[in-house]
Picture 1 (cartoon, rainbow, N blue to C red):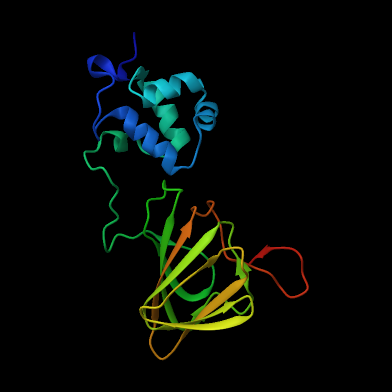
Picture 2: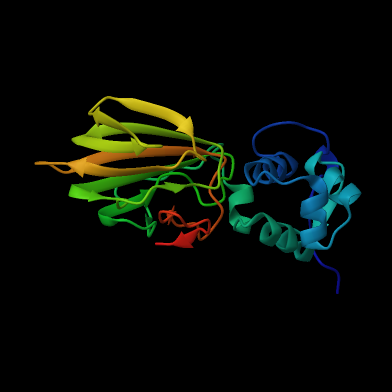
Length: 213
């Protein structure tokens, strides 16, 4: 019995948002992976993956499933009509990212690795804790949507009110807390996305190691 194939077919080389190759390429770029990395993780050849992305070859269902596993995407996402991925209001997936007196939600798809947006709802005096921390990414952007927060940025205190924003290197040690009497709502954007299972890692005074809070 032969496996059904999905891919180029007679229309190979045609363009458009519905092409399988374009969706595979976009998923790989969203993961910030190279052709070689995806080929190794899926057990396929680099040349074959390249041909699939350019709609120059067809893939068996088994091969496509292996590719989707390497890209951490559901196979159905390759055939959706929408160009982008929507995260609906009220359906934000909650995340546990450390700190106290906070609820946090992921606003970007979990498969998106180029950028990551997180929404924090912080109770008065809640926040990351007194100890400063760093994040394993490059740039961090903060926008206060409601309330006020105090950010300790490498020992420099900064107060941000609703509408204020801040951009800084994520390797800078920092900490934050909400100022009362009302809760604060804060949008955090980091690029590239944080590795899976990352937590805010605080550096205790006079300690060179990074331990999870």
